[in-house]
Amino acid sequence: MKLIATSTLDRAQRYVFVCEQLAKKRSVSVDAYVEQIVPKLFSLAWDIVPNVRLALSRCIALTLLPLDYLTSIQKTNYDLPEVLLSLLRDATLDHSVITILIRRMSVVCACPPLVYYKEKSKY
Image: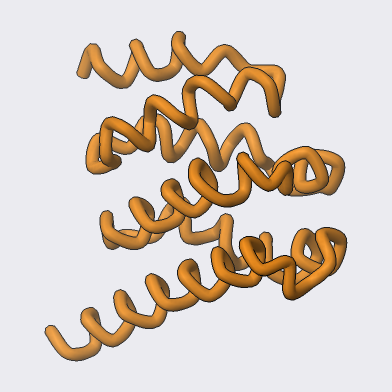
């Protein structure tokens, strides 16, 4: 069982890393990235392994946000606010990543991130 979980963890983290590199190097057009990569990438926001969610949050905060991919993603049918709020509420996330997400989230989507973050802190 441990090997299976590790294998799944490794694959998911590698997938996030590859997606991040594709965005950084602009190897794929933004439209193709949003249509073909984002659905699977964002589904990892609810992965059972905390390290996968952490890798995804870092990818969003440190790569997709600065490269302005989220504006294009928001124009599609993907639930960007739901993904971001799920990551913000995740107690396993690195605090520095949460700070970056909070600072930039209100610019990208029309949701008050500080309220949700404070709600998370109460529990």
